[in-house]
Image (cartoon, rainbow, N blue to C red):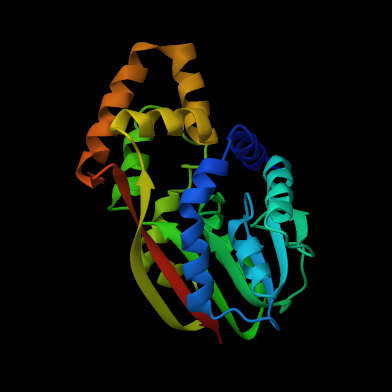
Length: 265
């Protein structure tokens, strides 16, 4: 494993994603409905994280494999699988840029805010298409660059050196339809849909507290700033919350995202 992937693996291992996972769980359900998952499908969930999408697909009766680079997240996914009272998901440790499967292995390939953080976008896209059967469906959810999470990423990247972080490959470009069309060679019938997920908060600062104690990337960022210059943390907090301000209404952060569905030629 190269240093970039090793660093990203360590970043995700720092987080505690259960509360975050509960909030974004409806995105998995919508993605699976749009892709039209049924009990006869073989499904790969790429960068499956804590297992939201894989578990939701398994509850539909599909034959599901979830793959992620971080063993700590896979351990959490197994716990979530047990709580959901489902079984039979194959959890694999692996890299989205080098999927350990034969060509044409799956009916459906999915990812929910996961594959977008792999460093090499072109290689990741090719791998996801490679393991998909001809006529199979690929579907994923990604944060939109011009909305809340995308704008926050842009602010955060100004405070740290990003070559070895999940922001290094501009992951929010996966939320740009023009960039997605460039990446998804060998597909047809590309469909895009925009939607919003509401993240409940008591106050803007509650959201900051949640992210800086639960998100692996934000934990790592704060640790780096503490080593360099503590005054930058308060500056970052103010910029972060100012950026989010237009998206906070009625005690929720409105987080816009892009759904992409396509069929392999």
